[in-house]
Length: 523
Image (cartoon, one colour):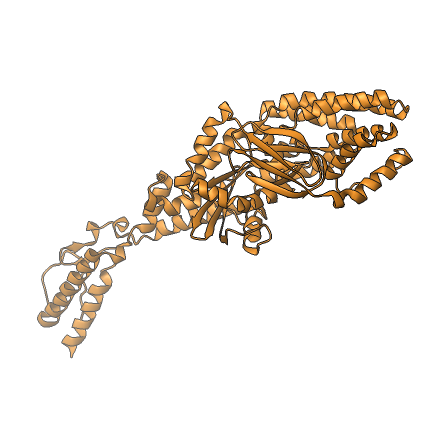
């Protein structure tokens, strides 16, 4: 019994001695090991967790630049509302826009770029084939219409600024304003002949730049005064197309007592008759297909396009496509007749690289490379957002994919929908698609996050050294999971058992190079 107790005590002593602090059995001495060699990976795990917590705290911090942009945008909206009440302030704003365009704009100056404007955005519309482009043009048009109506994005003015001669437009606007003010002076003095001359001069300045004009406020005012002059001169046949043009641009407008009673009555008469004589048609064709068509200042679709139930009288159009010189003009519609506008747009030399880069996105749609190219384009053009849509045919349906990319935050959001070719803006799936892309800013995902997810599988980017070290620390196997550690432990235990048996049987032994224990059970 005493031998058994001695064996158990020695075995326990031997086992306890086998700790990371050192071994004391046979040739496994404590001074042969360092504590660092028996690292269980705990320190590295703690460091990795600390790094992750720091990164999460940085991501949760609000972006001060965005806050600044929001503040400036609100202030600029108030300035713009005041500018609509004063012609002088409108002129100052245009001068400000010109100087900003030369120096390069940023997100802090968005609101000062153009009246009623939000973030600067351009749209890139891609198709897998020309056949898809023709069949899916109405679907893409719904997205453009959503952008054109949005108050969050200055889509129309941004693209016009990038692909139009804005200097020429500024000069035309200043000339038109001057002629309008002089014409009003003559009009108030009842000198309709001289007033008409000044108003016609203003019209010529504006109509000569309809390919660049996006805001029809000044144009419609000139048109109204021209119609009023002709009416007061009792030239109703000349007044009619101008009065109808004014109503086409401003369908909900009314005129006050600042005009002569006969002019007010005439306006109301034309407005009542307006719907009854909306039986004309316009067909827009030409090249390239998929160009945006604006009629009387409103987006109406993409080429090729046929519009029916249009009012008779004068109408003003502009045709736009990124990378091409815009076209514009005035047309007069007559009852039950179709007017054909066949317009071929010419490429802008400076935009050739833009067209090449955007067309190259087709083969990389949805990849890290495509998203990074998009942010590069935004940097080059000085815009804040780029919307990329891609349509492919899937039998009788269209697979429609969109990416909204935020240049400043290097983030994006994605929307997908499978739609019938007959889908319209009212189709719930298409409406949801457009709203998801142009709606709130809380659904954006960092491009860098997607890059890390796809880097290994696609090989599109190289991991940063810091990230590589972090991943290695996460993947390093703790020592206690290594096979060799438990082999040593097994050997040590076996040796301990042998030592215990030896001492239990022999009761006395020679010297030991490790710790020793003398047990005396008494006499």
